Length: 222
Image (cartoon, rainbow, N blue to C red; front, side, top):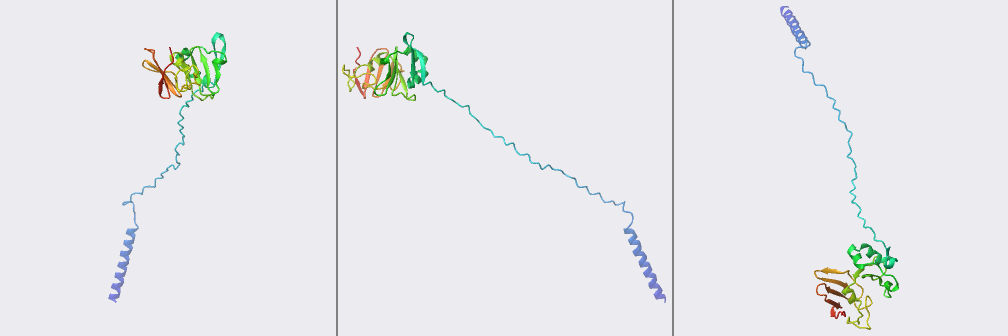
């Protein structure tokens, strides 16, 4: 009997201990309060993508326009008569320097002083020179030959080999042909080149040299 009572007493005591432990676990928890977890921070990131400006840069260079030379122009000729220049003659006159225009003087009138030769060469005579081109196409180069010894040598009648001849031809139909340059100058020597030769003049000594097809021929000047 005593042993049974003892066991009951021990069972009760054990149940009491369990009860006390359970009570301790479920007591006031304000003493060891855990640090509050940081509330999630709502981070608002704008996802609107800013597109780069689509700027089209056009590097437009200033247009370099070369003013077209007139293919026809009217100027005052001798004795107050108007003369109309056309084609390459007008183009050349329009681009001539003040010095070249001054050297030419006024244009001459009449069929013998302007026109088109059988070869197609066009020309306009002036008081002290001539403007001449291979044909009447405005794009054909024209050249200025002012008067003086070079022009006189070119206008001297010559045989086909370039030697002076009373029965020969002069000017563009002659052996020198059409000019291929204006009057150029280097030092004391000025020169004009032609299709088949050249004529040079020493402005100090007055000596004139005529070359036709690579051969020096008499100038024919007195």
